[in-house]
Length: 238
Image (tube, rainbow, N blue to C red; front, side, top):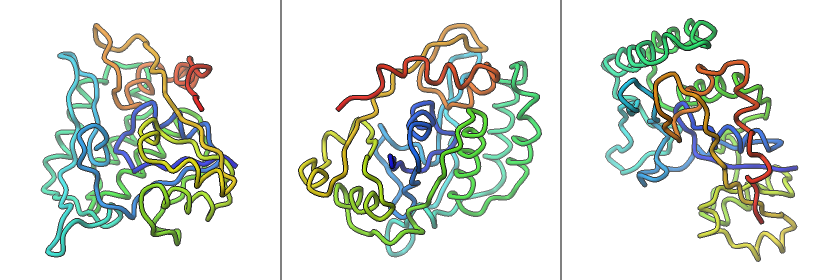
């Protein structure tokens, strides 16, 4: 069984969707604190195309309490309603003319009509919607529902063993910290997912890479899955 582990992401990008699509099960790492590394911090934000280039959609959160950082599963949204109105207005303005807008508009509007109190359910809702849009049926499991509570490489290995995986599909940063010898001793093979981002016609002039996967789902609704994996042969490395 092949497994991947990723921190939850708000309207995740294509590489997130592609990695999940290649696995038998995907773990949303929600029992750890919110990532604040600007290279990887997408749990409460992501990018979308606009007529002027791209912009962030950021959900305001309270990621700390009196005891310090809180796990993602308990992060509260600092909700006064303005971010929901802003995100919906941005998506309408940016994608209202896209071929797939009508297919998703009612769901998107209902998403932002809801008064979300915590981040995790919102993020999971956007992720599941995109997985459906890309016809990806891989089951999602929250790490908060599992027993493993070690750290870094050992946590990854323990989660693999807890679910009975014999192959772990890692992101490229895994090369920097995974203890490959420990995985080998445990009988878990490691593969690295180096996603080759496809270039496609966006709704607005020019191409901007690494947007939310919502961009492709809305602009090419009937070809989204094919475009997602257009360079599948280049994506995996030992």
